[in-house]
Length: 116
Image (cartoon, rainbow, N blue to C red; front, side, top):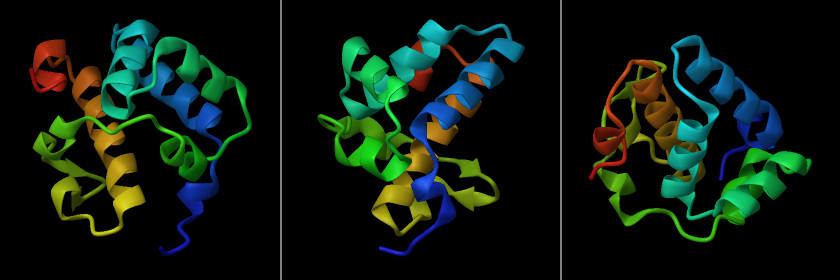
């Protein structure tokens, strides 16, 4: 696994940035929570514990109960890179989450974001 700087960033910091991004576009923190729980398998209490901890992104994803089997349906571009083509498994998970939050901020319906 390559050592990207983002892997060691605190999940709580990234989480707050996701919430800010969503709220700027009139979406809610509850929707951000729903997306993260859908992708990672955390329940709301488990996610709250992660947000309250000092865990980095690598630990957050390593401790995730179960990645959603539909995560592979997430396609598109984040930061100029197609998420489905990211080779590093951890970076792909991070990009999946980035893509879902981008879709939320762009006003996409939750059913589509959650690949229902």
